[in-house]
Image (cartoon, one colour):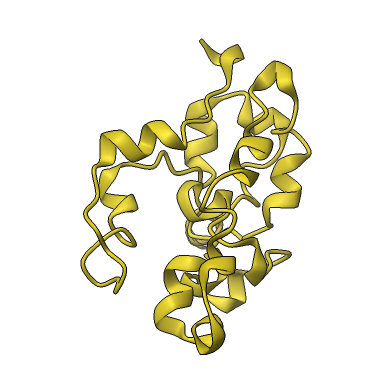
Length: 164
């Protein structure tokens, strides 16, 4: 009987440990880490495309005290809307970087994970949608002039042609 209780206790501890591992928080690693794989022309050069967008230059559009205002930073910098304890190598001046839309990259950054869409999603990759975009592109912004999701998502499209 004591042997059975020991087995059950060990099984319970393994169950708790497994749930803890799944509940882990992924860290924000910054666009420079994404660039390592997402800058090749053959796979879509997503990093280069991002650099040319208003998202990448979002911090430059802020003036004076706006650069330190949490109300502005929450949409103009990925760092401005994430838990500080999850920021690894992400920097405020990156603006609206990859991880604003795709989630913290520490869990899915490896090539082995990124090759498998389902595995990437399981490791924290977010496939952005209109709802996510509207967390910033909404009436709360003093500069809001409307938001046409289909139009704007076409402007920032950065597909990987090797995945089709």
